[in-house]
Image 1 (cartoon, rainbow, N blue to C red):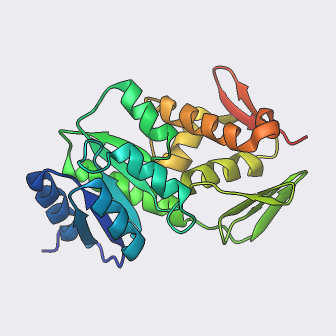
Image 2 (cartoon, helix red, strand yellow):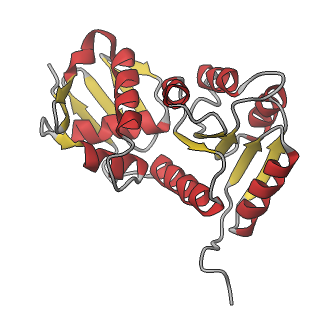
Length: 234
C-alpha cells in the first residue's frame, strides 16, 4: 500500500546542513514523499547551488561553515533572482531571540532540532502552498497601493517594492480585508497554516518587516490590541 503521506511533486528542495547525518535524514524523508532534493554542506556552496538550481524552497541550518545561515538568507533576499525563494530554518539554536532574528532577515519559518520529519514535511508543504497561491482577479488597487496577484508584485506610489512570498501574502490579506480587522488566529492560519496563537511572534515579526518596507506609509498597518491588525490606506 502506498504511504498516505506520499504525493507526486516536481518541486525541488535545497537542504543545507554541515552534519551529514542530518542531511541524510532530511533528504531521505523528503524524497520519500516525492520531492526532488539537492544538498549543500556550507553557506558558500548553498548560495552557489541556489543560484544555479533556483529551488522551490531551501531548508537551511544556521550554524554553517563558510557563511552562516543568517548571511545566506541576507544574500538571498538581496538577489533579485533568488529573493522569492522560501526559506525554512532548521537549527539547534532554539532561543526566541534566534527565531526572531531569523524571521526578521527573511526566513519564512523556523523549526528547531531535534525535530519530527513529519512536522518538517507539513511545514514545507504549508510554505509551498501559500507561496504558490493565486487568486482569480489579477490585481487590486487601493489609494497608493497596488498588488498584482499573478506575478506577486507590489507597487507603492507606482514604485515596485520587493517582498518575500510570505510578506506578499500577508499584505494581500490585509489589503483585501478592506479596513476590516483581521484576527491574529486568522492571519496565522491563512498565511502560515498554524491553527493556534503560539506563533504570534512570527506574525509580529513579519508585520514589523512589512512596515519597514512601507516607509512613510508604515502606519497604514494598524495594530488592534488584543485582536490583530487592520490595513487602512490613506
